[in-house]
Length: 273
View (cartoon, rainbow, N blue to C red):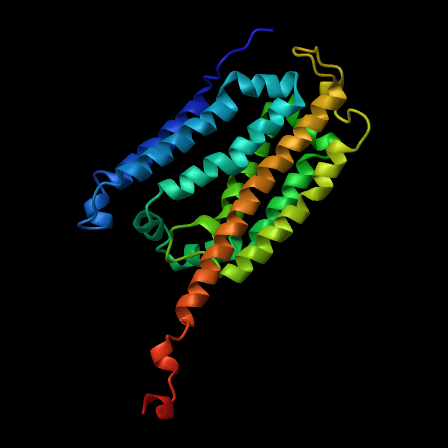
């Protein structure tokens, strides 16, 4: 087994172009986009950390291990692309830059539709489930073009899925607390069929991993079960965190809208006399 880091021109050019455009937006063009705004050092660190994680997911030896040997490695790769990298990109992009990019009305309306939980959540769940159908999954493992498409759809739909809960934009803002809590619960339920399919199949369902050389002491079935557990643990971790934060701030906003009366405010005119 000879592991290597990917240096394909398309991959490197794409990542470098994204990083360069972001640097232009928060650097030389900042005064034109948002006059008087300071340099967002903390957010820049988050954004470029997201870029590094994206490269580690698709450019490090993890990609080769996931393609040829271990299903759990491929699932780890997907979790980095769906949850970790998009979260860092979302929090790493200043609100003024997002709103400037969404200035065209047609784009704002399109994003408003695509990021609605009923749209973004359903699209993500459907596409994510479809990619785990054995025929499609195997096609992605054996055809680099399909594999790139798989990763791009997971990454882009991951952003659309997480947008209603995490975005800093004011033009396409976060959804209400009630919608967030209901939608994140349904997303957890939506991944249960894939988790059950992978975990309780009773046999290795992907031929590539069933016949792959064992590079660690983990048989194909337990490798598949571990991959399903990684998927569900990461999904549950993000979902429950978002659910708890949404509930906390919802309860806090309700307290502010309906403050508890003070003893002085509850005195009747008679008691005051």
